[in-house]
Length: 163
Image 1 (cartoon, helix red, strand yellow):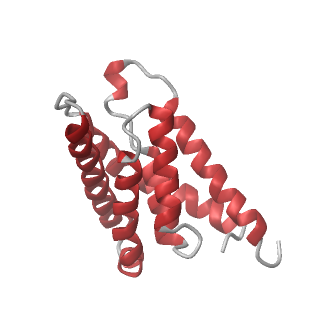
Image 2 (cartoon, rainbow, N blue to C red):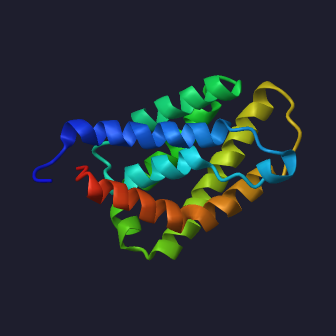
């Protein structure tokens, strides 16, 4: 394939986000569900680091707003979380690119933990959610799955010459 597939590039990014949303929405038994990685945040973070000019904080906010609608949560909580972590990753993308994949995994886990904690805190302002250790397990499983997500999305980006 010669040249850049800029038109297909955005479409490929959107497709990976749709797959991440589907993976988030698939029902799982409660025992397994609490270990579900934050697929959407992982994919958003990958694209923000890999192509910060393609996926911005505003795009991450829109994805978070979509997650609020699909999950039935207070409107704007996931949008806020996605915007915050994508802003941090977007401003530090050059440093993050130079980290090893395992160092990146630790940063992604920390960002997802902050996202989950922020969502819980904002939800607490508007309702009284129960403290649930799910967000800690989601951050841990996201940390562990990051190397696979990173390698897979990098393969997609290179295979389809997404720029």
